[in-house]
Image (tube, rainbow, N blue to C red; front, side, top):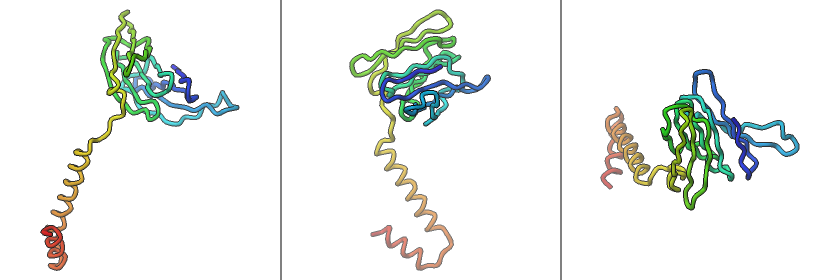
Length: 169
């Protein structure tokens, strides 16, 4: 399956292994060589083969449908998985993206002869980042582990006193 974004000139394709996972590839189309796409990035979309693929006109959102009825929403530039949905019980046959205000909707059809419209709010389409509090908590835990290691490691007394002095200051 191949879908092409309007700008920038990128090509997105689905790659499947027999009975294995489905992958999405993002490729560039070099000017002057339209038949030689270069793979820029690829990522596993699902444990199941990809049966349908859709890309937003600007290449920001990629949506993959699978043989198990899943819909996987990915960020176009990085192919990071943003959202995974299960709107169908059978394989997805068709996907269409529709922009609506701040978010967009996905029209999906399946082998069970049913179609679903799934609204995606703008917040679901943003790349997920670690919050400042999570990063701070990880740093504090790492520092605590380092201090504990230094205090309980067999060292000469001067080094232990220096660490204890730095902690009490």
